[in-house]
Length: 207
Image (cartoon, rainbow, N blue to C red):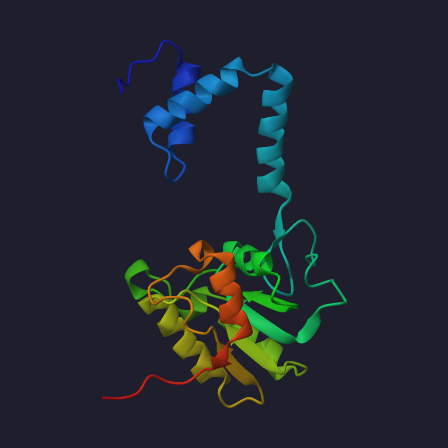
């Protein structure tokens, strides 16, 4: 669409929306025009919600997932099995696993996966914190629930090598999750069965 706007404020708002991933300038323009048609109280509430999100949201000190409090609701739930840790890439994956209703342990959020192409190495993730958690004791099983991509498999292998000398069972999702699938986009039934039927992690065969 043309870059000429009748209002500088309108243009600035469109630019901000267009800076979001997956939002083109035409979509950004429609969203801004929608907000202009909304009641000013609603728009103010919308803006305050975004501001609070950025200023008040924090990361759980235990699982490193997104939370409103220093310890998230899942980690503080005493009915969950704290001896089983499900390792995931991000908060979207926590939500995906929770939606299956097949897992009652706790989580550990890595904050990404190892990807040299993107400049992400082990030190950029919370793998060290995971190892500390296992070394502290009380963990009987670590489930590697990462996407079945090359980067996900690389991260699985690295974590396995870090934990393999410790007294903990290391498992991974059953291959109901197809190779190349991103976890958060896997349907709930398939993901749920992959958790229930998880298997012992093993290194890929050589040759």
